[in-house]
Image (cartoon, rainbow, N blue to C red; front, side):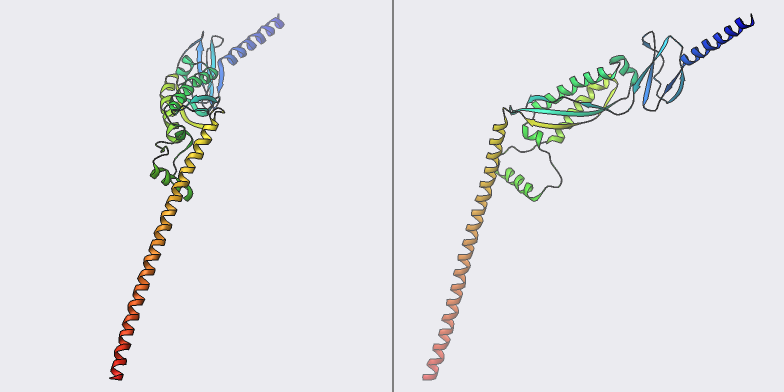
Length: 269
């Protein structure tokens, strides 16, 4: 009989330990937790690390990452405003700031990545379609090499080349602003987006190269024209200075000759 009691006591202790073990869970530093009961969230999200309690068996722990996460899109072909197809590769950084909303709307990171694919892909396509190719591949800098500064000045003066109104950085900001507003409803905060790579589509590369050659030829012709003009100005100044020197020399010769003639007349008088 005593052995049966011992078995019963051991069974109760084991059952108690199992119940206690099922009631305790750990939240680590890099995650937050949503507790669900029969599939529905209960209580507020658990965001502080440490040992926590829940109802055993009926409540389930759903960990959600609270680190900065990465979204890396697939390269996609899309048209620019000037009807040139380019391959755009974009990446972004994001994090979950409202775990309950995130869990209710998306449930897991795989769904979140899929939704980011749709939103960021759409906003990137819209932004690219509103800008010329040169706006996407060029950016402005506070300090530029002298050669680039000269080329920029020549392009501005000629008026034949497409001016840079915004540049790649501003286009990235437009995509970020539009996408950040749309992802808020999913409990997500978009932190940053960047163009990782922009490649010319094979079918438009010859057109791009022809345009680049044409633009640089126009700039070279402008420099050549300015150089010829400067050379003509220098030659004109040289002729003018030479004539001035010769005229002054002739005047001085005549003055000396006049003085000499006067002295000669005085001597022979």
